[in-house]
Length: 269
Length: 175
Image: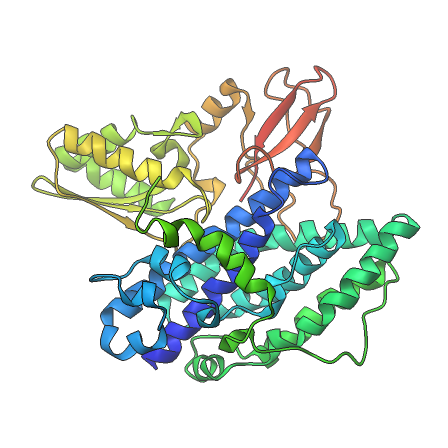
């Protein structure tokens, strides 16, 4: 139970951190100033969520160090003296110890692909957090309640972009079609529970993914229908991220994100 | 809101706690320096026992970088005035809302050139392309304004422009 709660919290934190980092790659490169600020703010919200979750994961880890330390084998992490903190979890774990969904680590591509990734994920996060507000774990319930308010903004912002591009020019529409076709294969994993998610759902700590799938699909379908864009059918669904098996992109992301702490351990601003 | 009022009520009967609340009025939000942490409504509780002070803080936005600076400044001012140890605890639930911002705070915001959050939240629903929230220009008081971006210079603000005086301005959005 301790093991599953720790892994589940890490999974939630990794989702938020990795998507937050991806979005932050747009900072200074957005299509215009306002949208550059918008996506940077969404990055900030997500990284803020991940901090709350990593702090909680660190607390769980420190309380039960003996039983949990075998879960993280990266030498840099193993060498942390004494108690660990949020930064150790973000910067010192290796790629196969991250448990985020494959969707969030996918490359930014063009603006259409970035907003599509955001929309698919934020609509999922909205339903997840709505369910998690009733969690029997008070800390996760509180984080869900707090984060949900921010996620609602993300869903609206990214959903409006789906419509704007889908209803825009021939080119923007074609880019939307390309985006949804390249990302759809990563949506199956969102609702395919890992063992720790099943365990958490049975314990009343997390919602059952089956219970939130319909609301997510309706939101996606309705939004795409507004622009007469079709969702792909018969797509092979990729999975593995929740158990540490990632696409090739995550390693490169971590190399950039973790470089400073790995090269200069414990350096601070 | 209630917790704050209840607590301020009890502070009146406790001169030391009262001093702490007064000191907190001098701690500004580093990104909106006209607002104190009291104006923001983020201090949920203060427990004073001898010289030791325990404070409960609710963050505005989870990723708000100002929160770390605020915590440090609170600690500094209390230690300076001879209190200690100072224990800061983060309370996430119930989540912070702009309804907790004081009326005095809203007036200060407007005088500073930032439109304060509307008293009644108008467009915090998930529907797409809603009519923009009617926001009054903090410079010329015109209602002829339009939103330029839902996300402004910080997570808590959106960007507006006045159609009359033509000045752009920040709106501290409802949350």
